[in-house]
Amino acid sequence: MQISFHGAAGGVTGSCHLVTAGDRKILIDCGMFQGSHELHEDNAAPFGFDPASVDVLLLTHAHLDHCGRIPLLVKLGFTGEIICTAATRDLMRLVLLDSAHLHEEEARRRKRHATQKGGSDPLYDTIDAVNSFDQLGRVATYGQPIDLGHGASATFHDAGHILGSASILLSVTEDDRNRRILFSGDLGPPNRPLLNDPQPPGDADIIVMETTYGDRDHRNMDESQDEFFEAIRQADARGGNVIIPTFALERAQELLFFLRGGMVTGTLPSDMRVFLDSPMAISATKIFHRHPEAMKGAVDRMIRSGQDPFKLPDLHFTRDASDSIRLNRIRAGAVIMAGSGMCTGGRVRHHLRHNLAHADCSLIFVGFAAKGTLARIIIDGAKSVKLFGDHIPVRAQIHTINGFSAHAGRKDLLAWHRKNRAPDITFLIHGEDGARESFAAKVQGTRVERPSLHQTFDI
Image 1: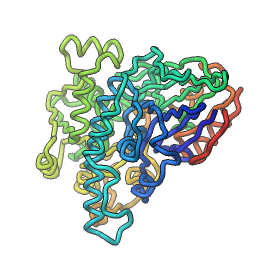
Image 2: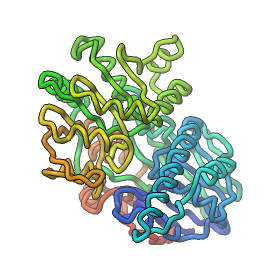
Image 3: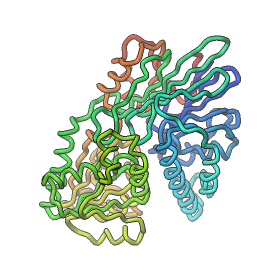
Image 4: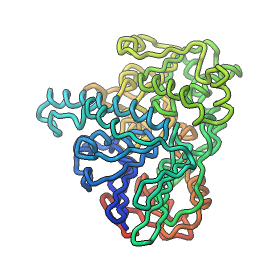
């Protein structure tokens, strides 16, 4: 029996882990690498296994770095079943169609600049994405085991990260020996406004867990919310705009929920103009309405009673590119939420181009920024950045509010690990090397491994 790591091993993105038991191959996640300057090459590189040999894919959640290479997996021969929760299924379709469109756009750009690396073919296209949906099989319900055949089963548990996210307890048998392997997926922090707290299964021989914030904790949520409101008020008082690079899944909806609360209490002006300039985030918000069962009881009841937890008095959804372009004419009083959250692409880059040089504006980062991304470059103090061929000075006020992160901090990661029976082995993944090393020093009662890319372990 073996486990091998083909992504998020020495980095934060590209989650992809393969369990082999006898002639049974079970893949957990198939994510895209993000943040590198060689993205096309990284994602087009061989998986490290034969896609056609994989029997089943268990998907923890719908973030691109966990599901983004599924169309390529299918394109290269995977014909097995994809199992995930109902909310993840809906969000995954949305994410992969958007990703395919971006790959097609990037391929056209490379074709125009033929000297660049990567060739002119997209990693996958819209047809590939649609074809991959044919592999969607059974829908997982939290706490209910799913028979995978050949003595294997999988049980999904709420991970509290994004809508529908799960930790997966995989039970596999080989030569009459059973091993219970727990994949944390991405874990959310406790006491989130929309989602339930992560639910540790409590009994595993092996734990494979994320360490995105394994080296630090987040600020208190209440303090972070106060800081968020204050940054908006300051920009409003200066007469500038607020730009919020926003992850379309979870973060956008959570921020709308907070903004609604701020307006209801009078902490924020009730007539403040808010623009959700992200077609994906707009569609994701509709999916949230479709899955109240995946949220906290109070939010579930709110939606079922006909109330909208994401509705603001002066909220504008900008789906069309022409509407997005018109936002660049606004010089004051607007809160613009746009993707991508790490500023690696999307409409937010245009808003940065038109607002970053103005000292009266504010740029608020509310999530993780991987090394090499534009968001990380700005957070680390760059005096200017290159956007669309122009060097743009960074004069706007920069705010980094990590308390809104959808990832658990070190204290909560350790608490989650302790609530599970002490495993024989704990594999630390989905974290930069410094975070993994720091977290490893805190984990007790287990052998700790920090796998490298494509490394295989006997279990």
